Image 1 (tube, rainbow, N blue to C red):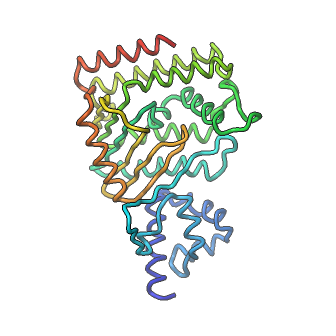
Image 2: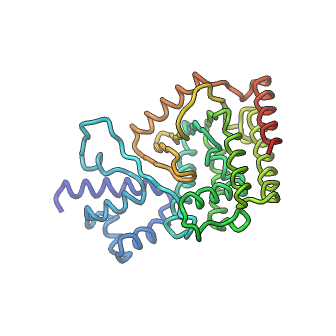
Image 3: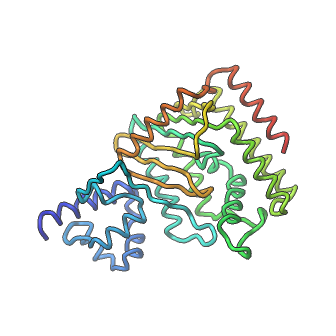
Length: 322
């Protein structure tokens, strides 16, 4: 093994460890992915031997990071690597569970740093909130299945059941997200109305019944109660700061980042419940600056009593129309 190969492998192992904080999950995932014995994996992770380029590519695709900086590749244009990812709710497997659980691990790792920060700009109800409300999340699965499935694969809302491991992951996510030192969210004023329109459509094609509508309405009412509780004091119950804004200008989809001194994750939501994700520090910083700039063209709701009352009243009137 020459020095370059050793340095690349050592850097690659560190990149894996940074991306997957909970090391106990790593062995099974990589052994299955690379079709090698555990001892062969351990030799690679100890730098006794090296991962092949093919193995590196497989791992990078799964974890969503770029090999460019590791290999010293510089693009002549301003391009950065984003990995598209989504869970396959038609047939959940170990990789899907890993994707769900590893993001919670990443949040917990980031939250240990005093500078941890989460920023979101969203045109709809973001995945960051959906994890708090299982029935609303089930509706988004229904929408995703309808858009991506064959005719025989589409289920009605009542037939969609939440997987226990995914539910457990959502519970852990809900606790982890509160540990972030500073969170802000910029919402489109029409986000809830857009969701109402979607529910109405699926009701008209009989995939959502009137009983289902009542279930969703109850969850949405609880969602508004939670939002109002948090924005009234401008913090989670543990004291970590939360700011909610409504945007006065339009943007295309949902953007978010998770930042700390040792974690840099940026995401662009796609395909209803999927995302394009990067762990590149420059990409995260670019996203961070842009989302902070959106706050300048937005109205602060948190801690401003008249803004909060007017905003929450508008949202409840929209919900009452369902």
